[in-house]
Image (tube, rainbow, N blue to C red; front, side, top):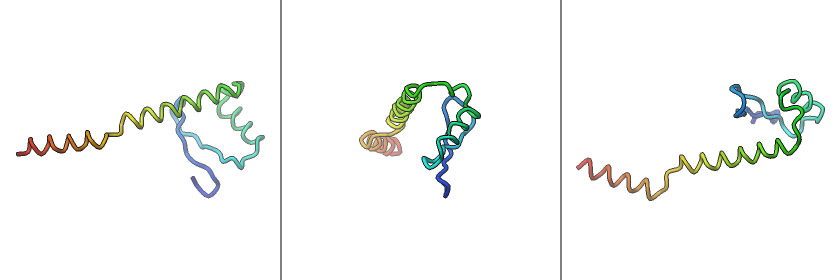
Length: 86
């Protein structure tokens, strides 16, 4: 996040990155951004965005657990490598 409170994010429905706007931004600017940059989502209700947020959180949690190697698995891998090296 930079000094203006702006952070780069990647949206799963778009191939390009977009800028996550700070909470300090006025509602009118947020609305203009939505209609200008995401017209296909402009008429979606609040529940749609809540579902997207929840889906994103679940996906993030799943991906983290999928790529995290447990301590025991890492230790076992080390021991197997050590045995093979002998």
